[in-house]
Amino acid sequence: MAVIIDEFQDMKFYIYDMSQEIFSDLDSKGRLNGPGAINLPATYDRQAQSRKAPMLVSGSAVTLIFKTVMGGPLGGRFDFMYMKPMSIPDGAMLLHQTLKYYAPDNAITPEHALYASAQVGGHPYYLYCLATSKYEGKGFGDEKAIDQLIRYEIENGKIYGFWLTHFRDNRKYLNADDDLELGKKIIYYFTQYNNQPVDVKGIADKLNVPKQAVEDKIERLYQADLVYRSAEKFYTFNDITLMRFIKFVYEQDLEGIDKIDLSQQNLMNTLKGKFLEMVVEVSMMKFNHESLPGLWFGKTSEVEVPLFQFVRTMTVKGAKTPSYQIDVFGKEQRRNKVWLCECKYTKTPMDIQQVKKLESAAQVLISSHEEEGTAMPLIHLWLVSTGGFRKDVLSYVNARADIYASDYEGINNLFKAFGGNYSIPKFAVND
Image (cartoon, rainbow, N blue to C red; front, top):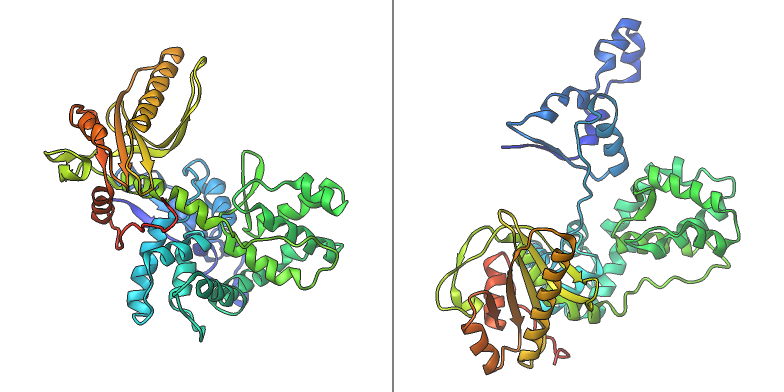
């Protein structure tokens, strides 16, 4: 059991929101210790440390939540974690579901659902806005139609209204500039750093202004919850849609600026190259000791999948070895065992050389543990190929208990078993 409170920062202002008139009528005692001194979040100081019902709080106003729980009466009682957007495959699943409910007449293919999800970074709210949009030409039949729909939402729809309200609510930070034109240019150039550290010096050099002027402006963006701070650096959120909104609002009023391209023209090519890895990664993160059909893994008997402590892409390298990129690496939760996955998203079968490459990566991983003097993990290999496998690979896998092999049917069935509501696309260019 856990206590979960969303939009926790609102409790500080909108609950027990006392009018100024009533507050003025209170005496000093009432203001300091009585009704006028109510700080509802602070009353959770004991609940926050409960071992029976851990307390989780969340909210979109990241800076405000951070100040509320990391200092004052609640200081030292919370850890802080930034929740990432949904994965692109999960975002495509959400769009399929929301369209069935809100716009059943608007059909969408898996490929176009992935494109739409990728274009808004997998953000659930933006996907909801697309599904419920009032755009007269609303459609999901091709990439151009989706681009037009996204543009409408950013410039005229719910996304526009959401961010316009946020900017107006925070204009005391955003417009607090001695030079308004310079302040707008700093915000404009800030959009090119989506999901990465903000290059303060780069912006300062571009505008030929002191670095401190840019730092002051980025600090105000932090106060307005448009960036977050980590390791003493400012980072933009992974929110290309926000960047496009800022570009739309500010670009039309500015002169003498370099145009910033936020079209993500090569995004789908990148997505096609990484999509199978994302599917495998998303599926592995949902494993929890289920017994699954062995045929999905190239085996005759059932396979019990583990609960993973973490799943990610990883590069391994020893002191005297070449480096190897592991498409998906998973560390099991309860024992010292890891999974190394090789993903091949093409129509041609996987050959034995790719298997040997993954085994070489496993040997480098072993060498790195030997060099560091750390406990050697058990290693399990998982081959995933939408084009299937050559006969020699299948024979090799059949003779090895520590290797699984999933073809298109296998990984597609596995993806659907863990929430997928569409078939993995077979892109026309992936041969």
